[in-house]
Length: 131
Image (cartoon, rainbow, N blue to C red):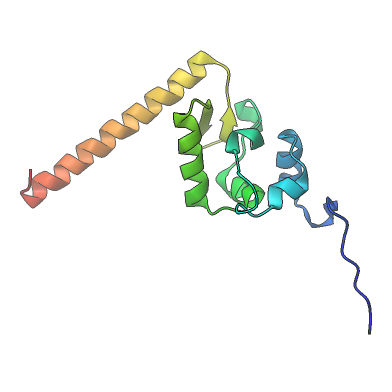
């Protein structure tokens, strides 16, 4: 019978380059990136770097947290409502900002999206003949 040895915690051999970069930018040990959500409380803001050029996409946040995309987005929403300046864009992903102008641009973008969703909902109600 052959004896298999487990790799050491933090062994880099199983990490992708993006996971390594994302974890190292966030100053979070790799073990913490992969631990089950049930084992620890996850704060997405602790995993995110500052600046659009360092943004982390949803797929990498899923890998880092062990959560599915929907739960990652829920957690981001909770943290934003608690005051975390987590912003995002389609090009760069999620990141932190300290720039009030950038935060305001993001807030305006979300307000615009909310108005568009409301217009669509009203059109559907009108087409269905409900108020």
